Image (cartoon, rainbow, N blue to C red; front, side, top):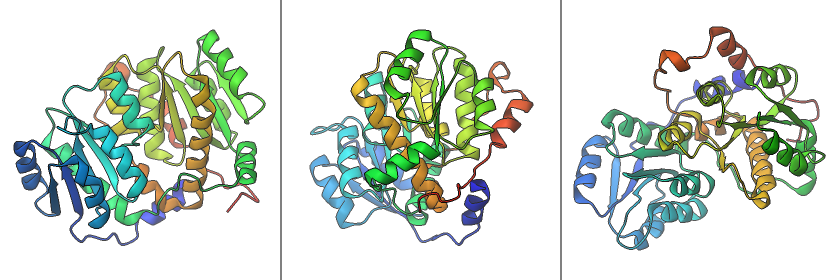
Length: 325
């Protein structure tokens, strides 16, 4: 099973040399704090967004933290450039007033490893840098275009896409877009989705947070901790920015969609999610790059029943006979 293979990689020796962390901010007090929090590592300061991308490549950095507001650029745009030219580096974005547009771009375009809201928690910020540096050193790259068309078609046949959605209009829209192209299963509850996932290899879970928000959010966090190879796409989470930040950091959500999503992006998102699932299945150590932070204790009102937790953690992680390698 995949989980066993990944746990074996966690026992391997990790490169513990100081990490190279690029901090891009025009605010001296933030730089001073980071110098203290990350003092065990090599912190490279840069106040010029225009020079930061080249510096990330020249110094072969392990992680890049950028503040969203810069005099000459937006942080999320800079991290998108870093993703293209220095993909080995994990990306962290620091912002004091995140809105829906920023969160969409942070996930869908920059693929941030952690989103850090201000005012930050020192322990969380220290751990974010350590996790990013460890992932960059330990894990192989996840290439954007790693599959041929033939491989992509085969992956669609082998790995299911599960949709948890109880809004009839949205479910029908997704049926029209995806059915016939993917091995797809629709469920109107988490329980029904799990019934299918317990029997079928699942590569992608698409979940809506418009209803049963707390249950779906909590389930996605547990799912990613136990099965980092399953990619998730979340619909309609953007009305609550705090919840989205939790989904980024504690569930490593792969893509975000608005409720009235652009149909032109839906299939590419699903294809990219299946490709991510396939790559991690082939290279279990790559799961380091998508490991979430430890979830904060949930309020009693949103805690999942023990039986449901066990079902999520016990989902199979089969490798198919003849699966593409």
